[in-house]
Length: 562
Image (tube, rainbow, N blue to C red; front, top):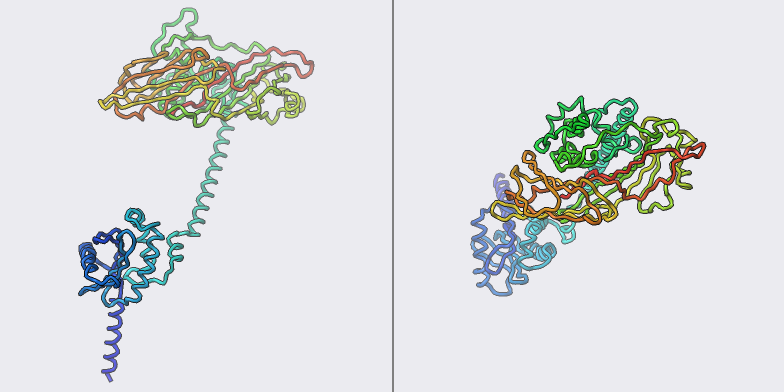
């Protein structure tokens, strides 16, 4: 009884052995000379054995009749199909493999190769090698067994279009959008807090808790009038108590040459000296921002930047208390980003009309503007408490319900904005070139593109990447070098229609042209880009004119060439 059982077990073992040996060892795309372009092994084979088998293939094909598509050796069988351009599609199988099934596999791979590679040229095979390997894996499994696959199913699998992946991407985008929205809400809340601090400053006369600019927010960023920008004089009133602390954070001290005290107004000079740290606050986002803030380059009091750089601008007396019932400030800020070749990538103008009622007479004011003549390319918006109907129909700005403006604090009543490349008043074209001898030659061209403006105290800040002094070869205007900060300031007192361009050429030790960016630009102007005009300021009850003090200011918020 044992003999049939033994025979049955032997038959099963033999069948299992045959199944395990009826496999495809390798699938390859090779040349007529046996050079493998793509080869995928499905069993454990070292590289030398694969290269030896492929090298023997051309010799065996030459000894075989043309009509055969396979050739055998003592250990393996080559099943092949000629392709275009002297290429071969080759399967290396065991001798026990089912040749009929192998021929079906070969025909399927012959369709897959040109479909995936897009052609049967050697360079297309090399470019799509990994895609072909993935396609071979769809036809043959690990171990060399044929899968039940068609050309369309292989295409679908190679696309790897996953519904779960799409859901995951959608969820990630939703979370990012939610985080972005929360960030915007947080920024808005911080902005409102700054505006509240600013209003408290004007009411109580105490210092704000953090440095704030004149355009921090519409409705509270006007401040008392100044020669360079709405908020800077207010910030300077608090410097005497904090001057010693701010000097510790002054990286531009090398440019602060002591100025001889004027006998007529020594207190004014002392205050001007303290102004160097007025925009400080103890923290600087970057060295460029620190220089611009502490030297008051980008919107400080008139002549402040030039005086700090030693350009001889006069020091002005502090602003006196308001002498009129009403103070008005028309203020514009520009944000501009340029490429290194001078092309404007983004430019945005934001303007605001701030009103400060100094007395009850000023609180009853009605402001008339030239609304009919304002260009439609600008976007305009009134404060929610302003009578919008009166503004739209007659160009009059007054509070709803006949109420008066608050006394003693600034209120933004009208704002406007504009986006366009033509708004940028200055373009910079910077060409640093490595001379190959440890020196870099830098050529910079500056051009004023708006002939309708007059810009004062134009300062162009260039990082140098070294403490070495530049060797000036040609310059229009003036310059100042700060060796401690590794910066240079290119200065123009005035730019207008007559003086509207300049060039600078210098050499400096170095080998990295990228250190000269970003270049930041600062200026001030009393000419606005928006042609808004106050045509009348009258009393809401009697219609009598109200004496007022009007200030116009145009300064950059951010203006850089990167």
